[in-house]
Image (cartoon, rainbow, N blue to C red; front, side, top):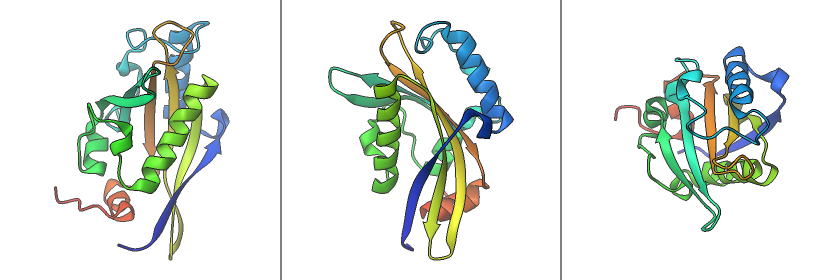
Length: 171
């Protein structure tokens, strides 16, 4: 596999594609004055249907400081080659992607605020944009983060994304 580096560039709400802005609007309406809506208050059908397969819900357990993936969309399974439902975020591969995701999830927990980023891949042939991702806090008590909703807008086709990540698309 070729040497590569994955990075995330922070984005503002105004930088997002319209589909992710729709998720933001639904999240804001569902949360009211809380830091985030509960899982029950945020219906996944608020997510545009073309992005639902590229969405995940991850529970955050403050007592053990762990992120456990509750829902992992079929599009993510297709890209990653594995269903991460029920798995710990620390099991994410490759390691550079895991470290980046852990950092971005930690930011949602620490700041109790949504964040957006553009994922880029740097290889010998140059930088390529992979996706734009939004991460929104979920809260069962309205005060503390108990989960994170992630929605990915692919900037490239799935086959090319698999090549970037060094994954076999034939599974």
